[in-house]
Length: 303
Image (cartoon, rainbow, N blue to C red):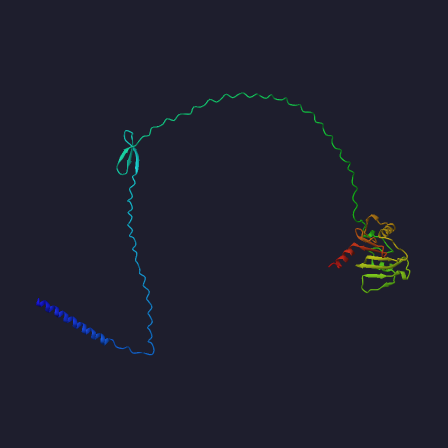
């Protein structure tokens, strides 16, 4: 018991010493805080770090390997027969068996039905052939009487140069010396010219009465053409037809070969084999030209 009392007293003493030391410590630590004019800057709070995303690893399901069935060997069969003629099926695995025989069905032949007896058709009586009537023969159509056509007249007259009319002593084809003796001497002289121009009305030359002017043209020293202009006070024709009729009557020219101009009633023309005649009642002019001279003139004036 005494030991126990001593132990308790020790504990109390130890506890009291602990309280006294604690008070000393509190007295030392509680010092007055120094007053400052400016408040100390509060430290900025640090930004909270975002929590890292957790990576959750998903485990892939483990696939079980599929076990493919082993291919079964194909068994070939051969149809054969035993010595006694029974059919046998032989297999490639070494087995065999008798082949099953299917019973042969007897095919029934179709019974032919009796065809009905045909009813006889009435036979049509042949109609009597009509006798042909006599056909009246057509009378031949009378052919029209064909009158013989008269021979067509040529478009131009067939007079040659030697048949050309001689007017006031002048004739186509005569030499220049002969023409000089006939044409009056009242002339317009043009040196080295194939043309002679004369005015017989001023001298009243014999054979050239009522003639105002004569124009004679020569080619190779031969008269190839000439023009006679009559005095309008002495003689005047009303139209080309009247002029042509008067010339045909006086010089025995075929009147049917005259050609008249529909637009110019004063003009008329006759074309013969070797010469041409042109008349103009408005100017009282008569012109004769040889065909050779006409061709040369046309060629000279050709473009």
